[in-house]
Amino acid sequence: MHTIEKDIKTYLAQTKNFLICDSKLKKIITAEIEESIYEYAENNGISDIGQIYEHFGSPEETAKTYLGQADPKKLKKAVSTNRIIMTALIIALLMLAVFLMAVFIDAHIDFRGYGIEYPAVEITEDLLTEPF
Image 1 (cartoon, rainbow, N blue to C red):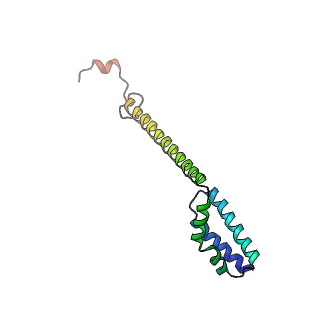
Image 2 (image 1 turned 180 degrees about the horizontal axis):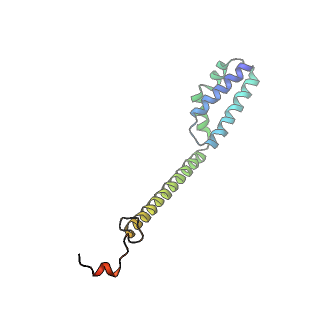
Image 3 (image 1 turned 60 degrees about the vertical axis):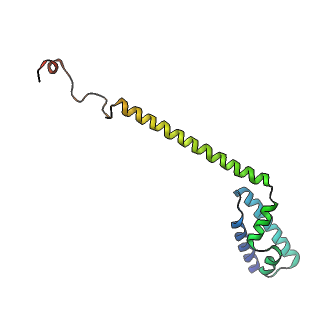
């Protein structure tokens, strides 16, 4: 039975690759598939992975079957939640970029393009009265 368990694990890994949904739902569906396969294997004395393929189909077919049975509201909610999070993150990053640009432009204007806060030469009355 050791080789059949290894074959079932491989089958489950392949099936998991075909599940296109969020990780939470993927874990739930994978657990359901695993439970169904092991239950079928125990009840029918399965000794060959070919019998699993005959009963459940290819990993891709199994994934499609279980995804078809999944609650569409859960799938839609997971996708819309991810979309909302990504949109909010992008907006926050854009706002940060605009803020930083405004700060740098303001600093550039205040220093007239230079990073000097005081005059390089001290201006005295002597310098002002001497002709050039």
